[in-house]
Image (cartoon, rainbow, N blue to C red; front, side):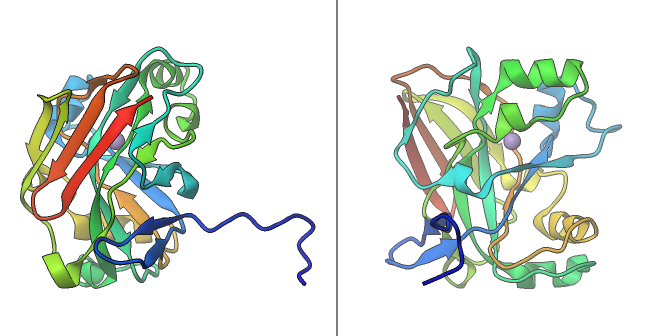
Length: 228
Ligand code: MN
């Protein structure tokens, strides 16, 4: 018996590669414009505007092989990103200690209603309607640092229907993983189960129903998702 007046929602979680264990999700922090070539394609200037953060909801992140095209948009874009999963947190974490917080990594898509995002930018409104909708972040099983080490370099790419759309290298990230963790911990109390989506390289673009998205990050794995 419990005192909850409705059944408590399930804890969002991601699978662990090669295991039946699960990584429970606390919060999801996403970094915007963390690759210079993507900042440029979005009309920004990476030399003048540093990267910034927004959030998705924990249950937006799901390991699944399909992405339901969302309502209320006619311009939904793919953004391939490395995910960092934290096993510990805290406040004011120095960059030198930040990697001690990392449990592992994954491959995810930051699916974005670009038309609603553009309208939000024009009107100086927040981004939730563009970013934090249901199943907006399909994600691969996570891999542990114990197995793959820390990922600071390596190819990151996305094919749609077999054609390369996005291509970059983790080494191109403006804010590296330790800097992201340190910066976030100055704004929020980071906690075990927090996820950081680390930004996307250039080449974002629209998908339509039926498209097959295949993302890959060297040393981490693959993600295959059909738009339905
Ligand atoms: Mn993104």
